[in-house]
Length: 71
Image 1: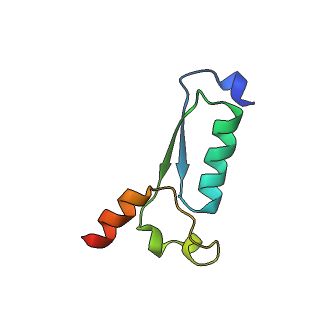
Image 2: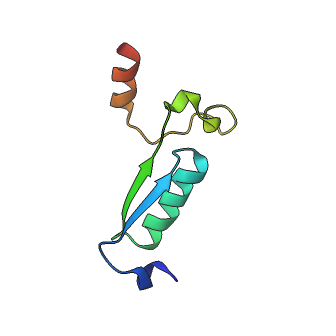
């Protein structure tokens, strides 16, 4: 099944915001921009596996990081 067979208004859940999760989300959205993709995570980014091995690889915005570190 490809994204075109799934149809419009399809929601996709991706578990994990590391390099694999974000790469998967990017590949899907590039293939079918109509998909509704949500990336879930259960711990702060700094406690994930991607923080060290993959380098600083995150999907939040710069403004969110400023607020996070100030609080």
